[in-house]
Image (cartoon, rainbow, N blue to C red; front, side, top):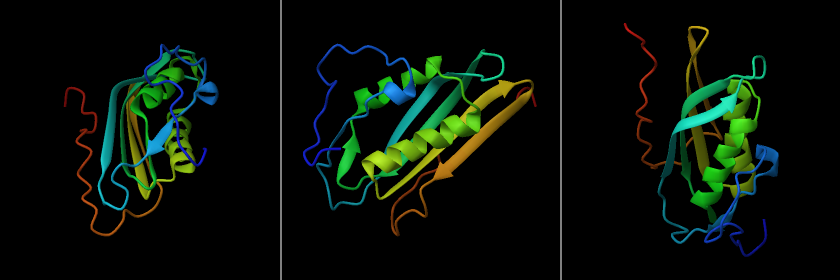
Length: 152
């Protein structure tokens, strides 16, 4: 990331990247640097591919972060998440990998991701990862996604 964050996709026609590795995440200067706050992105229709069957897997992702010097530009995040439609990966690898990439590149004060995966083979899998404990005094609401209950 350059010293002066710039966007490569905002305001331009952009194609969906062929893979997460090819997706360019853009970051911009935090307009409220020094203010403690939380940002939430919800992706209720996230899709990736099962590495065993090649069939689509669906999840509701919730990404919460406390910004540092930069914030992620939302169009680039949407394209990054969309690039998983062609990516084979286990639920754990996909969820944790998204959180780790955002943390490594954006360097937020704190980040957590919840991956609420819809059942495949009768078993829902929920995956949670965070970069560490949240900063003292940060309001961190519940992610608001109920565990899968089926008909019960």
